[in-house]
Image (cartoon, rainbow, N blue to C red; front, side, top):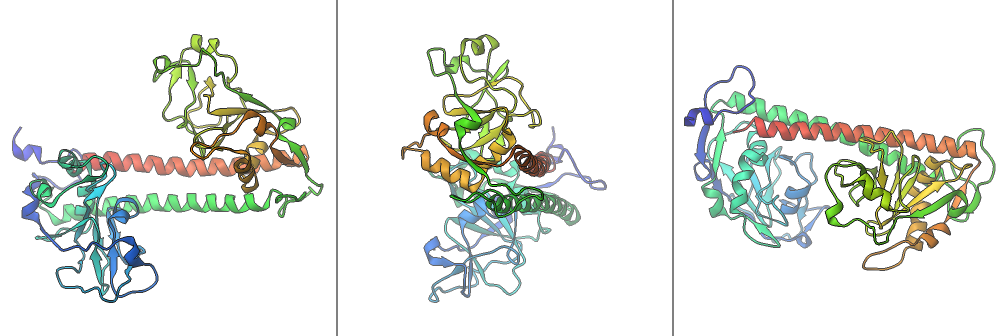
Length: 433
């Protein structure tokens, strides 16, 4: 295969042809000067110079850092001196040169500076393109696998990974010759990010709305009436032990407990792990299975529809309601030894019990009955004696249904975000060389 054919992406906007240009990093960029100020030297209230910290590049900022819209900290000291070699310009790229994993090398392209004075901070490598690139191209290209995969063999360090300026020098920067094609690519991915941000904002708003209602639609500690209530309900809520409203079931911990050799990626019965029971409920994206025969050897711990799973060790207090509406529902499942099953009795709604346990009061009570510092735990006995406030059954059903609908809306927005992020990941692999 010739060099020209190699430097052509799999997916391309119509109207663009020809091979992309390939140059060494050293032919495309010059290095700028950064500073070594720590978080302690920064503040978010006032100052003359804003600072880009490597931690924010790794976690907070995306491929494009619009300094007009993002909250950048100020340098606290009025003795800090700046020069033309320090100040950033639009189009500059800031690379994080240290991280705890292979995200080292993540970068942000700068835009929106205007009259602001912005500098690059601790553990960053600020770079300025020698030639002008269309806005967005470098930010998305240098965070794509096409470029970042070049960095992986160059990373040094064990606990802290790092990349050096000298290592970057011989990496390849590949780009379309046409400024119009660069701009099309940068604009496309920016619009995709805006769509992801829009759905993320909707998700955050629904979560915030739910959290606010959970504070008000369940009685506060020691009270018998909630602050906010559905019309038609006015009776006092009862205080009951959890064992009065649900059977508390633990898993089999005996000699037949599965070992690593019993697990496979496919099989009959899902054996729940910590990745399956999260703070947001069930997740069946990454599973470990045991055979039906192995499952039949086990005693307690087999899930039935409408069971509630409570994590009792490790990530303590996660709640998940086992019902067939769950995404990627698995029909046969068992809990592991770090979980408990709450199986609601006839006169009580499982959806209500699950939502009560997620409420601020419910979570506080979970914290109160847990023990141990290194690895907090919950016992079956203590969970059985857990106090729960219970309204009449019709109100239980109304509350449970209302919050389940909110959870379904949250799950819908999350699925949209996950789908868009997968699309972006795939396109980043195919639209760059």
